[in-house]
Image 1 (cartoon, rainbow, N blue to C red):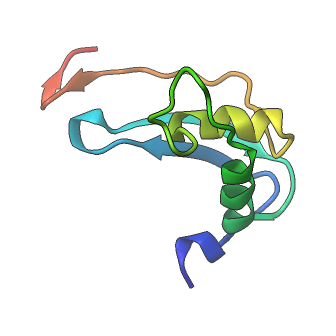
Image 2 (spheres, rainbow, N blue to C red; image 1 turned 120 degrees about the vertical axis):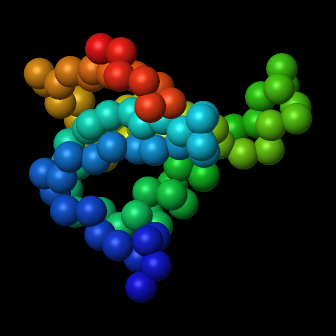
Image 3 (cartoon, rainbow, N blue to C red; image 1 turned 180 degrees about the horizontal axis):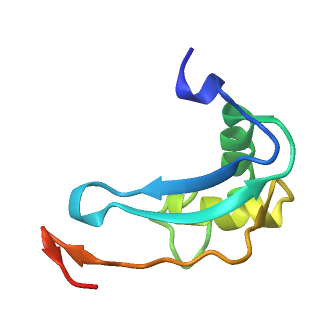
Length: 95
C-alpha cells in the first residue's frame, strides 16, 4: 500500500507539510469531514488547477494551495483554538 492508497478517516486532524530541509513547513491542522482516500483528493486538486496567463511557467497546482483547497472544496474544516508557537531555529531555543 502506498501513501496515496491510505484512507483519511472522518474527524482526523490533518497537517499538510511542504518543502524540504530549511524550507520545510507545515500548515493546519484542519479536520477531515468524511472518510476519503488520499489519491482521490490529490487527483481532484490536480484537476481543479487552471493555468494562469500571468504565470505561464507554472505547469501544475501549488502545494501551498492544497490545504486552502481542501477547506474550500468541502473536504475539511478549520479547527478552532489552535496555536502555533515557533521556539527556534538551527538548535537555538528562542521562544
